[in-house]
Image (cartoon, rainbow, N blue to C red; front, side, top):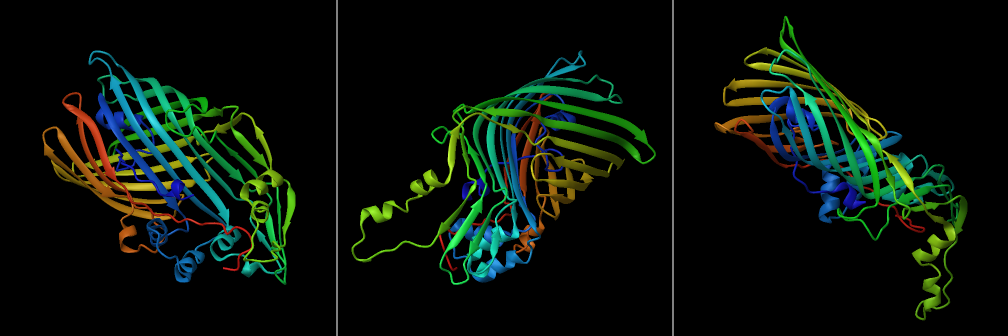
Length: 440
């Protein structure tokens, strides 16, 4: 689980430090260009920076820190992250209204939703559930990564008052896949602690564990992407609408995919040992993880499919003056345990070579977030951007905020090509499950 939540990466974005995993947004600002960059977001509606830092660095997670997270649980608790790295080119002649897009991307999606009892059982053990059931059902974890090979086109003439429209089709190479659904699962602890009982019909699917690297082929799929930008004149200033639908597709995982199912009740009442100073190998082997897995689950190697988290994005921008631009937007990810995300941004142009950006958003995998960014032109064709979409993560690290710090330097074809390098710190929390009968 730690590998799912703690990932170091470079990140970038174009629209106020948030590309939203959409390559067409690069073209909206930079036109013909070559883009090399990445972006990452990881957030939770109940997890704190303090906890994840302690967990990641290997420090002791004391009761105070656990209790801190406990005050924010709310029935169904969400965590999630998205990683997107890209190399994308927009090419075409000045005399033509057509632009062609070619790109190679690496994408990874992680999301989970857990009940309050899953958190309590994992962090505190089962002592608090003596004489009653802990509800471990209605929880799920999804994690998968793949490579994307994209070809598409745009229609964009020299007339800047006309709409820009584009579409792309992609071949997807599946790399790794993990999906856990606990369905209806609960653990009962006897009042006298003489036994525990697990009732479950959980399902677990994962790709071939012997092939998990980027060059391994564990599945194949297709996806489509659509983009439209419409500029218009208003009384408030030059404005534009941007509408995008991306990740509209699927991955079919190979026949080597492992599919575990369990639909039974299991009771554990301890292991009887005659002499602790004379343990026999047969005693230890009888409680090995492999023997439990073989006796408690059904395994089938068969194909499995994944619907991608379709991303729907709407952006509206108004340039009130040469000094200020205002943006509002809406984003939603389907099939991803994601809540609708609303955001607003303001760009203050202090001079021709320097601007300040502010960001305020609510929803997604977290709650309220706010940030600030700086943009400066160092030389004629070198622009640097850096900032955070959740600066409050520095100020109140015990709160569940996501933090994204960005450093960017763009350059394009008319002497500008885009290169983004970012350092991202984010907010999350992890839980671990006690195995066996533990009074923590």
